[in-house]
Length: 467
Ligand code: ACO
View (spheres, rainbow, N blue to C red):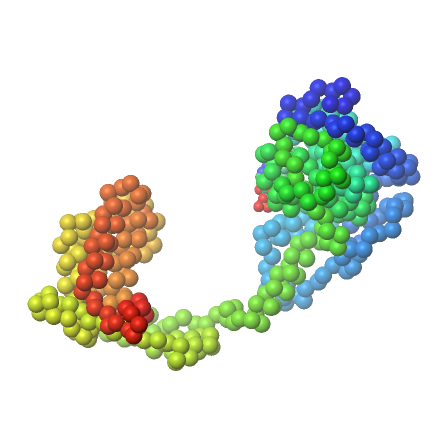
């Protein structure tokens, strides 16, 4: 540990052997900058130039220097931002209104800067209790370090990032990052990081941020684009940055042409471009009216009839043609009452078969939990969890109506739902879950011996599409 300080208990700093040597180069540079700098740099939005009372290097080309992308009003309205963009866009609005601001702060003897740095030091000390205070003070006040302070309108510092810029190596090492406790999880941390990237990219000309993230803050850094994979050549960083125990080394690449302060708008434009391309390739965005057919029948008691597939809105438009619709394989049904005769599946035979199948299921020992609707007294939350309940007594009512189970598929779909509902509601080690499995297996065996598919050329027919 440098300067004879006690190593921090957590994120323990182990200064590398030749840090001092290389650090001196940017340090000298910064000293010169520091003397010229009389004030802070004020972040501006939408790529406006960074106001500085001094000359740094020529501005680096980036989309920040171009006008921020603007969407046509109608498109912007249609493409609502995702939650992520929404939060940051709200903060951008507050920046524009002057409620909050971000300052690039150097320790250059400017009294206002010192006030901001002391504010930052206080937040870091509080939010990073495992870091010795003296260590925080030393780094925050170090003239080789840069800080980005997040200020409220009244000038109070509510968060910030301090990093050391290794100019010759092209990367910055984030030493501290924190937002005051009552302002966390409001999006400030994200905006702060984006502002810091933009300052580091455009003023310090850095291409990478490295940091030893506290293990409990790794998730935050990941969401800011940091990865555990370090792509920066090892020679460029090893020995320059400090090792911390209890931390994870992470990296973020700052693309030279990305403007980090206008990211939400960029994401919006990207989404719009993607959306436009998808619309060129597909018509999945077209919403067609649903089928009124069944709703109109309602409880009138009228017989349900099938809807021709071509009458379903969107089927033709989606590119389906008559040749593409294959009829399901033909099958015969074995009727016990006719001594096990296999009969063509006419409407009448189907009805007789379904009655026979239902009686068979009800008669099985394992079917007792499925015979009647689940009682709320037995399972108070059942109907909150299971949105499409079914039971054998309901199936019996449907079968009696003559117009419900007009295909075998509709009937077996209800049976499948019976088992799936049970397995969804009950844990695998319960008797109900096990009975559902057993009953399903018996039903499958029954179906395979009582529904006889006509063999297609080349083998058994495929699963029927519509029976
Ligand atoms: N772990 C995992 N995810 C987190 C954490 C965390 N500790 N903190 C925030 N996040 C998530 C948020 O849930 C949010 O997720 P979302 O975008 O999916 O909604 C996202 O990160 C960004 O949240 P913000 O609201 O923008 O961040 P916030 O203002 O809370 O600031 C910060 C994050 C700086 C980590 C803050 O919580 C803090 O000061 N923590 C205490 C100090 C600390 O741990 N600092 C990092 C130490 S490591 C170092 O300094 C190098």
